[in-house]
Length: 182
Figure 1: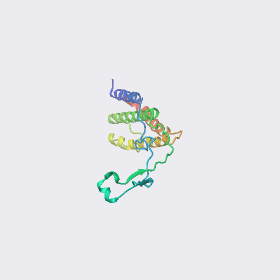
Figure 2 (figure 1 turned 45 degrees about the vertical axis):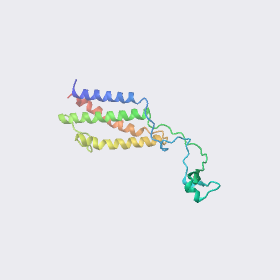
Figure 3 (figure 1 turned 135 degrees about the vertical axis):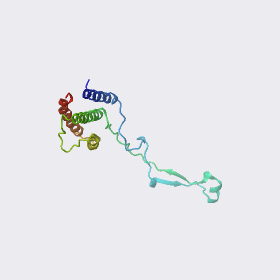
Figure 4 (figure 1 turned 45 degrees about the horizontal axis):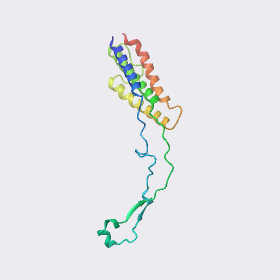
């Protein structure tokens, strides 16, 4: 088996492993910092000091139970709305395909550049191995962050940014396949 086919097989195994692991993913971070929805935060201004009936400063030192107690005034508010899961199976599959195709595109391009059987079609893309990843991974991260925010806001077309990453690298892999065997 050739070097390019080994890379392609490795990328496919990685993609299938990601989809298998994506069965039960953790929920996205929430804004209530781990508090249950039944716990209501209390503001400092809502606290009042409750003095015992016969409070005497002279006995306060001798009797700790005579010290003033702070009691919260709790108003029942409606519970926090149920947040829907943003990082779900669909999001994970799109992220896995995008990562796999990015790696496959760059590694296949590096292989044919090393053998001098092709040239990089994108004039803005560097030809150095590390520079290719360093220039593209932040762009992929921003697009996935944007998709995450859009999905969290309930937008229907949240999947377009990941699809653009997948499409661009699928074209790169498609054009690189003809140079794999050379």
